[in-house]
Length: 407
Image (cartoon, rainbow, N blue to C red; front, top):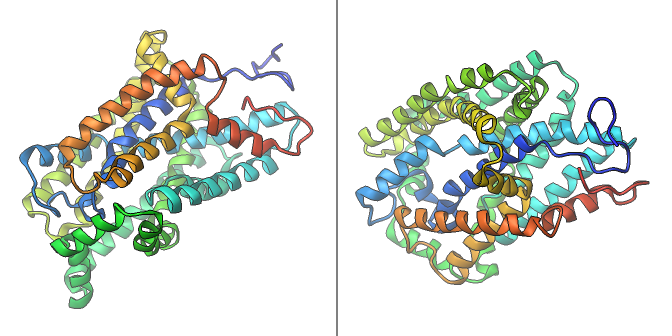
């Protein structure tokens, strides 16, 4: 039975918003385009494609196209979907006469724990912990009007951009010893790369010993001076889009064409960032300015992608490939960890870390995409949700008067 506003009666399974699953599925698949580089190559190579020899023209093209079309774009989409999910979770908890605030913070607490385990035991590039921390803060804006959410979202999103610009301006005046340390990370010596490759091909203890300071910095200073603000900004903008009905196809078709208008300016800014770094021959002096251009263009591009996906959904909602992507989005948590596990097995346990180039990694991405698009829909024919989604929901609702895992 449904109420007059379309929500499920307490104790019943609430209907899913299919468009959220569709966008989330595209985001999770797209995120793997960038994550596989961090999973399979030394840290310096993530931002500096010429940090490790050999580098072919194909590798540079893959880097450049990934920067323009993928880097930060799918994380932005996922962050906006996460913000929308906070509002949807609260609405459904209230419809079931459950305490939304308590459940939300319990939900974020468990996600933070999952993120810590993911970062320390599997892979340092975890996004779950930052999302959990930002998700707790995002609750403060839950009841804000759309205009306020947009203003705050854009302002928070621009904080890391301002910090990147200030660091860029400071590089020529930096103490020579500090600049030398930055250059050593930006373009490490062969011995340093070999040590990283050996450590990451070793056992769990060796990997943690080598990465522990890096992981700790990402989860502390890295969040305070960057990640937290951009993720929170994405979430607030996602809340605004959800309240407007953009993410649930409740707006006119023209709205998606307007969003599509952000695509070319966003791509142009990212493309200029690529050109800027290539022209500077990937000098350490542009190590912050190049990514800044891409950062500024990423939100615009993500909005353009959401516009495209809205138009696709309006035209071909029942297409077979769309249904497969929705299945990935419905199992986003499990799909994300599955990608990490595949990467850990290939690069750390089989020993391929540091041995492949970007052009090779793209082939692995396509194979993993194919596996997830084939097998995740088959899994959902037998189960209502992914295994990690099930565990997360059971933990969230444990101890409440009604455990309903459909949210």
